[in-house]
Image (cartoon, rainbow, N blue to C red; front, top):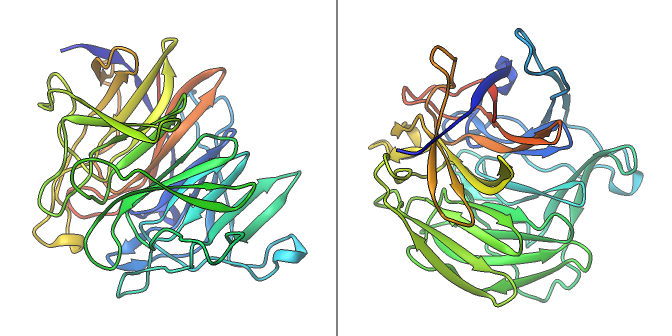
Length: 353
């Protein structure tokens, strides 16, 4: 089994971050956490928690500072009063230094939050102020994505974000949509192959979207990476051995992120649920402890190993993660999630190489 050596560092642990089914996006060295639940089917809050991951985060005893943006009006007058409702199973991505969120579930009945194709934008910068903006499509008569939860989002970083799959009021989806943040227009793209699913993961690299994993209502999905070519609006599929030895096992509610490792463009997947709970959303299934790196060019997988005696995060699913960059090297930050004993986790870890 091919391996790559990584190091996990606990960067924060606090009760206010205890949650699952939340989302996390990074801006520079900040990780912004939104949404999630502490009690099944009950959204915890609509605060934004901001972890400041400043150096020297690798030193023993380091703890990232934490601040929160609580339920209050935007600091930008024209958007005063615009605040998203508390929700779980939402998704987020960063475009041009701003974070965008789409839909999710809200309330005990867990119905999808229907905002008629609008997105929430969160700004956290000197140039744009701090606060929420509600972004509406330019033409309300045009089609928009169905409201959903446990979907995934990614972006090209500059102008376009992508929304895929997830769970509407009933069933699961396989659709793919793009939204251009400059002209505020939704475009429906080619639907993905294979089964409709929730809890899948998707990332962007060099004009392509990479999708992996998910739950189709009966089984966790594994053994394939679906690749969407943006220029041609077409999908292809790369298959691999999904046995936990030569490649990662089937999983959902995990993560898939594009990053550079040892100078090579790579995909990384971590943790996730390998078998669902018989209690459905009220319980926890079998959670995976592993992380894997895939070379985008060769499609070869390597399992992430740590030095003997090093601390590692607990197995989990339903967590939040994103890429973080320190000193020109990339890693990932993983926050919260659901443990196998059905406990919501309150920690944040960075995996570096």
